[in-house]
Image (cartoon, rainbow, N blue to C red):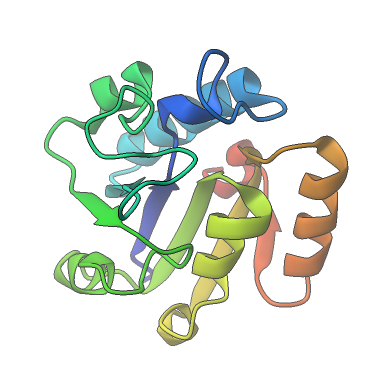
Length: 171
């Protein structure tokens, strides 16, 4: 029997209106991410949250800034779930993500978040992700700077990982 874990990547204030780097489709992606979290929990699937905190001065996600914080609606959903802090696009790189997933007994990953072509993609195709029986990106719960770039990234991922929408992933 598979043991999936939902990994929610970088749903942080800087990516929303008023933030340092607002993304295309951020609000609908937030709603889809909340739906994925609710569906995962209803099925007993653990959720792990990932937060990017920049090293030194950066264009966004600076330590101590309002923009670096998880979006309030995501922060409210964390509860007792683990939050893994990262400083690279690949959420496995120099973080506790791998050990956290091991501790949860994960053998399958469901990924969503921001930005599709960067942190979501790098995590999905990470060498560390190769060890999981299945990696699925929830394409409707991901976004980036434009619809075109999102679609290009999803197409690029299609040869390496499974793609799904939130409803199908938790059916």
